[in-house]
Image (cartoon, one colour):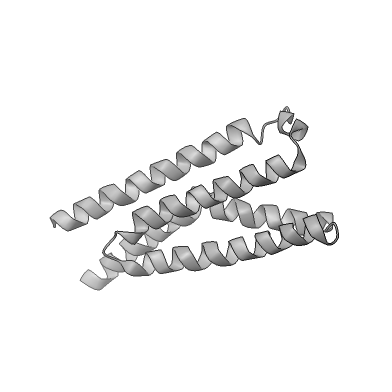
Length: 136
């Protein structure tokens, strides 16, 4: 039972770190006054990419040590596929041709899914539910 408590603490600390990064990103870079619009386009894209990578590594660190390895596998699958999509769209936008507003909105939505604590939290709820069903 002690291992379960350490898994729970590890999971909750990962969730707290992701919530802090997510909140920091929105408080300083996506504000109503839109002062972030004064940043150069490349700088803003690098900040967005860095925040996504930081959230990915926090989740990898905290989920990778848990007893239930399937959560880490899903985390990697979702983040790596999402990062491939937004990176390829970003490289196309920067080096080949500017992408449409709809594709940019799609990339922002993918990035939002990747940095939001909702994915991490949903995996924890699913894991708890599966453990309860296995005990019955």
